[in-house]
Image (cartoon, rainbow, N blue to C red; front, side):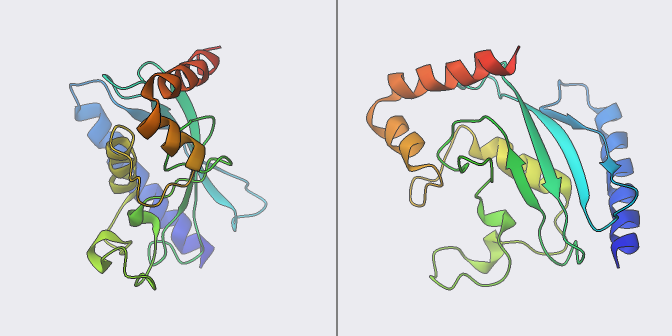
Length: 170
């Protein structure tokens, strides 16, 4: 099964690379595919996310990784972005957005149309993440401190993000 996932991902990445070549605008992310050749079960796709313009994250460079389950694309990947202070990113880097959740929401908070389905691709996830950065979901923050700072003292929030951005450039 993992070999099928590997082939599927290679195809998807080839398509993304072709799309990136055709882009005239600066891209908000870039990546290269690598895997531990001795253990194909641990498929990972590292990437770099460039902080979106006109946000406190602008000019930051953030490391991230996609981790793919053996039944991808039937199940969503897990995504982490490291060293980003954001209401919808846990302190360990785990990204918390609807598109990365599978199946029906037991609490009825997210509709099925907002959640993972096998037609979604890596690009869909990255676009959702880039959209989430300037517009966090405060109803269910993954990082409560970041959510509180954003809502209650945006200047303190921006200062903390600036420290992260400064460190990301070193």
